[in-house]
Image (cartoon, rainbow, N blue to C red; front, side, top):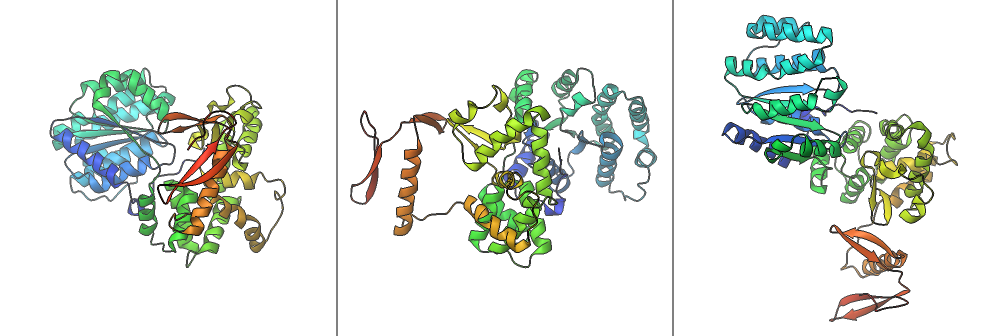
Length: 457
C-alpha cells in the first residue's frame, strides 16, 4: 500500500480548528487539566502533517515533544533525529554535524549518554519491549535537565504490535495512567480498531481521553487550500476540482502541485488534462495509488469477485438487493479503506476520482490502445463531466423545471427500499405516478401516488 509522507510544513494549510484544539489541550495540561488525545482517520488524510505542523509552528517552547514514528525508520532515522532537533531548538543550539546523530547527541547533551547507549543496545539486540519501555522514561530526564514537561506522540501506535513488544497494550495503558506528568497523543489509521481499543483496554482512561477524528476538508477549507497554492480559476472550475477530489487532502495536494508545475491557467481543458495525467495515465501517481489500494483491499483469490462488485457500483448499479445476491456472504465486510459505503438499500463509491479510475482502468474497449492527447480528451471528457453535478438555482425557472424532473425521477426509482435520513431509517414504497400541485400560492407540492393506500406529499 502506498503511504505518502507528510506535506512540507510551508505548504500545510487549513485544519485551523484542529490546530486550535491541540493547543487548548496542551494549555489545559500545563494548567493542571490533562486530556490525552487520539487522532484517528483513514490513511493519507493528513494526521502526521497536522501533528508536525503543530509541534514545529504552533506549540511553542513550554512543552517538549517526544515524537515516535512507528511507520518506518523507527529508531535511527526518526526517533533520535527528532530528539536531537528539538533539544537544539529548546536550548538555542546550532545544528551542524549530522553524520552520526547518536554520537553527536551524546557529545553535546552528556546527560543523555547513558540513555542513548542503552537504547542502542536494546535496538541491536532487537529487544523492542525494553527499548519502548526505556523511551517512556525519557520525559523524566527532560524534566530534570530542562524543567519541561513532555508530550509523547506515538504515530501509528498499532505498529507496536508488529515490533513484537510484549503486552504492548498493558505497557501503554499503565504508562498513560500512572504518568500524569506527561501528555499522550496516539495516532492511528485503523479508526474502528482504535476506537474499540480505547473503549475496552483503555476504559479507565477513556473519560480523560479525547478523540479527534480527522475527516476530509470542508468546501471552505478546500477553497483555502487551493488559494494557498496560488491557483486561480473560474469558480465553477474550482467547484469541479473540489467535487472530484471530494475534499481529500492527498488528492488536492497531488493535483494542485501538478497544476502549478504544468499549467499557466486552470480552465475546463486544463482540469481535464490534469485528471488525465494524474488519474487516467498509468504513469500518474493517483493511477498507481488506486491500483495499490485495490490490490491491498482483499486477498488475491477474492479480488476478481469484489472487483466485479465495485465496477457495477461505479457504473451506477447500486441496488443492494441485486448486488448482494450475486456475491459470497461476508465479502462486503471490507470497506476498501472508506471508498465504499452502504446507505440503506444502496451502495455507492463516495470517491469520484476512484470511481473514474475504475471506469477507465477496467474498460475493455480502451485498455491497451494508444490515443493522442486530443483523442483521449474527446473520449473521456464526457465521462468526467458526467460525474460533476450541476448546481441549480431554484429562483431560475429553467433550473426549477430541471430540479422537479430530477426529484420525480429519484422518487419513482424507489421500490420498497430504504435510506438513512438523519440517522433514521426511511422506507420509500413503489410509487405509480407523481403529480405536481401548487399549494399556498407558490409552494410546489409533489403528490406521490401508490397503487394502495394514501398518497405521499
